[in-house]
Amino acid sequence: RMAENAERLGQLFRAEMQKLVDGNPWIKLVRGQGLLNAVVIESRTAADGSPKTALEFSLMLAQNGLLAKPTHGDIIRFAPPLVITEEQMMECVNIIALTVRQFA
Image 1: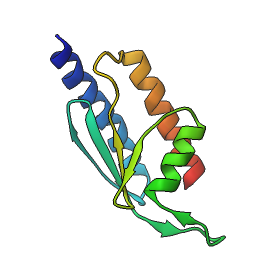
Image 2 (image 1 turned 120 degrees about the vertical axis):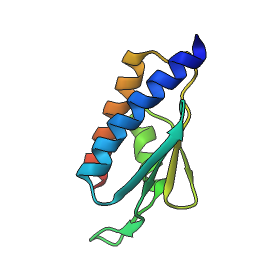
Image 3 (image 1 turned 90 degrees about the vertical axis):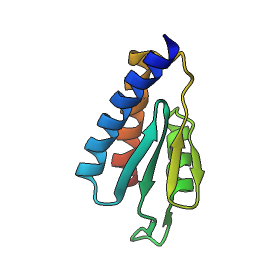
Image 4 (image 1 turned 60 degrees about the vertical axis):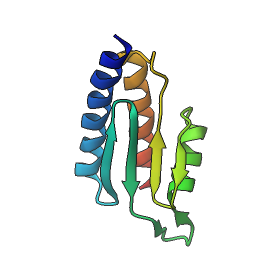
């Protein structure tokens, strides 16, 4: 039962993240299996000279209420608990979408 929930919500998460990939050229890829997922971004420098990396994105996510792990400078890993609900997953998706708008 938990595995079914993980697979269903993982598919939901990847579908929602794919919308962000399609709408933002600096978000290159979403990948994963079950609830273990990652988003690959294009590391870049903002007009003001500040870095735009997975670390900075993850720090903004944390300020907005969602913890994620940055790796390799351009990858953000998401690993929610197996007992996450669809409502909680959509709350996470909304935080990520908000952060994408702030980070752009």
